[in-house]
Length: 477
Image (cartoon, rainbow, N blue to C red):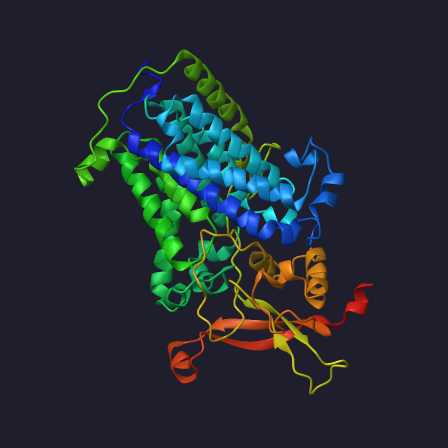
């Protein structure tokens, strides 16, 4: 079955299976730590109420039979254990059906979480992880060669991810067309990291070069992923290098990491052997069982049929960004930053113990784990871990109309709710409830080199206005 077998992609298969499983492991650990406080029985957007008002036709989830925070943690624990086994390569030592079953299991478990995650799970990389998990499930085990169709469909996923992002930029913000987008993006991106300020302070000609490089990597290079070797491997290398720059200069959860992993689908063992002679191409495999050929071919056909809608979306003048066309989150549309924010606003939440706050009252800020707050604090590196509350605070500052969760968040702060406080970096009241809380909006910008030397600050900020004026717990009764 030479037509079926990709005998020159053993390293690619190992990277794909173990890498995607590693991202699932991070996703399950992240959900176990954050989901109960955000979406649990007493969360900011309680999942049980969401389940009650939706149907399995639009939101399939195991939690329709029963939801509890304990069950959620059991699901996360089971998913993390299976993902860890795949990272270690244990299921891959057996017949091809073993890793397939393992990947389909973690795909189903994580789908159950995403489909009740509401706005806290409304990110494109959630669908990306689910699609990647379902696709690599059919790569087989170590004893047989990877199916060529699945290798190609993984490249098709990378193509949609990169080319879709490139098109959404050209069709969106003018700054991507006049090459000025990176004048702002490093500073205004959702979650800056320790190197973001240095990237922002680069000369403008370098920023314009960054945009040109981005357009080349996303609009030209993806087509060469389907070219003969070694051209496909070179194209994959360009994708990997550009994604590494994004990893170095920002925090985008696991988006860039999983893109790097998936790009290895276009890297052949022969090319890797030239670069690293110690990597020797695998010489022989056992024949693929007929049943595995049939099942993996059926999965490939399903993915091919479902590709009609995202392919149509790529050609549409009204291209959708980060959209799923089916309830299983398979073969989705992707894209990011079609528009670039040119001003960074931050919502700063503060509390006071004063019974009746006045101009003399002391207000203390709550610090978040990732988002900017303290002007002297260097933004941390936490990706590929995903801080969901911090990300929504960025959207809130942009004027997101969905503020239901934030109203409950303020109430939880007034109650000194321990699970909610655990989502934060610091609680200025050390577990005691404040009498009042408020939310003000500040304009933030990176300190120049001179300002950094003079003040020791990483950020400069000035007050813009109010989001929520002082409120006490009585306002929520």
